[in-house]
Image 1: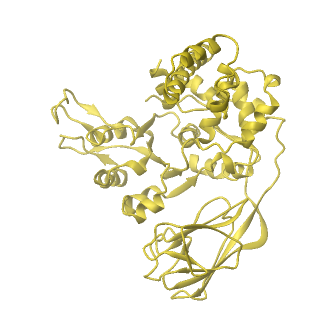
Image 2: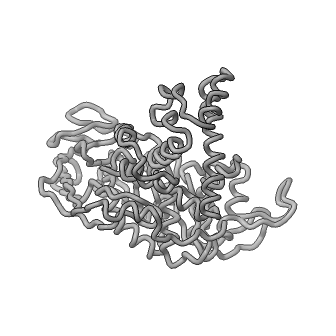
Image 3: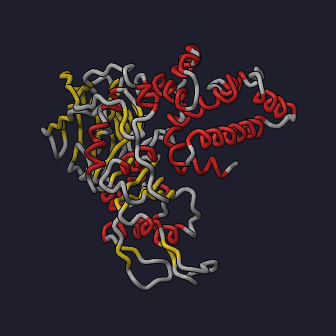
Length: 450
């Protein structure tokens, strides 16, 4: 739980420097007109809806806020990407209809009539292309990427790092939420303080409260001594509450109080303890849907979503697959000239459901084992590279194990060798994790498997 090491101008920057030519980021806007309903005649223009989800509903957090009582608090959302305009229903009570058909997720051409409760909307892209504020940098702290989708976020990251407000980081698994949180801490005024991670998905429900707030000796069976919780550990630093969407509703109320009052009471204790920690929260879940389904408290969402950042999936980051593959290849000890062009091409054709983490692991597997563990691992397993890796894989195959168990053994062996090698090269967990492009906690988890 010690502070993370500072970010240095490392080999990743050297790989990026001189290779990338960045230009202005252009984005369409979005125009929403209310045709019928209590808010008829209203028009909302979103200058840059290509970088985020545009919410429609009664809630104060919605970009298009309606007073129609038949519209849910978070009724629907609009997104724009390279594929065009998309409309998503967020689990609304009365449904979302396009030209009379109820939808859940649909692509629009523009000009369709959208019905939400008693309200009728016309939603279209604004034909005026805008230059979006963006950075000419290709990284923010440990976060790498030169795509327009990432560069438009870097100025936001810089402002958030300097602020003290809570930040809600959203995104699919493997998009780099923890790495972004570390980068925000490392470039913030609190960087000399601790950076503490609490993962709601890895602690049993019975121990969650004690882990968050600490406990006194004798508070429950097994509490043989006093123990401080993560809020106290993060005093004068930053606390990342990871996978907050998995937190039990009962504890959400207590967490809200701790964040608002900046004080905690240990389990079994009688006194309130003042804490000073900046709160970052991350989730892979769609919290708009979770709030709508009453699985996540609305008031806690408001408190955390003072600022809200959504990391784009790798499949939506134009050009970043090849760039990241080259960076990871070099950072993991490969010679840049030895990176096979056909491998990069295959990487670019893959949709990467595990995002940046999956790409990083694929590059590491290729360096350690050859082509057997590329994205096409299932078809190429039998080819086997030369050397010790092939011998190990041959032994696993000869055992006749079911494929999931065989794959698990190969992966565990890769992780063991990989962690050992990276620690040898970099000397400490902090520097090794930074060079790998993964969070310290994840690196520690790999190390614990050795």
